[in-house]
Length: 145
Figure 1 (cartoon, rainbow, N blue to C red):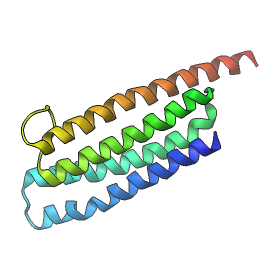
Figure 2: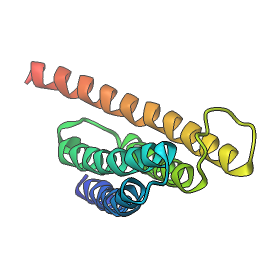
Figure 3: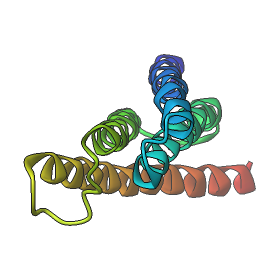
Figure 4: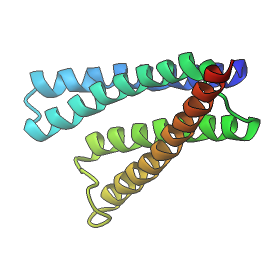
């Protein structure tokens, strides 16, 4: 369990760092009049990834409360890390390329953002589900002890 927590924490810190670094182009977009779309995209990348990194740290901090098999713990780690990096890729590429990725059409960068968001969203559903089940099992065990 401790190794899984540390893995999630490490990746959360990486995502947090990327989010903080996205503050540089966000500030430049504001001060150098890059346009409202660029300001919005870099704001979303900056704040979204900072929050995402903190969120992974929260997940790492509460993992020990869950009752998970070795297999479900591995699924939790892989899905939370896939989700985090999927959103990281999507948000940074969207801001750099000036695309939104709302549908799988248009320029290649738009399709990449769409696919990264799709993978990240599916992975998010998996890790939230694993945590939900692990929490329910832990609650049942706590009631009987």
